[in-house]
Length: 87
Image (cartoon, rainbow, N blue to C red; front, side, top):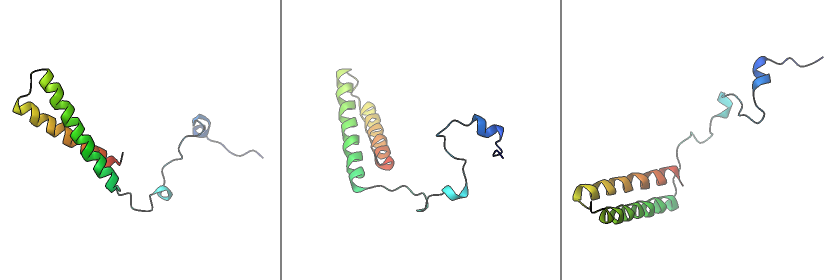
């Protein structure tokens, strides 16, 4: 006797993720883990982004305090993202 298949089974591509269920919850509670290396990497990236921002601003003659503050903000946000994403 053949196994019963639904129309959903026929149209699901092979290798696709199984449906969400309670059995697939992370064991550690799902919290974001960040390491010290990721923190140092985030700081380095933030400094690098700010240095590049300043260099481009000077090249475009747009190195006003507002532009530099925007560069510091962008660098800090990208560094924070690198740290939290653990890249």
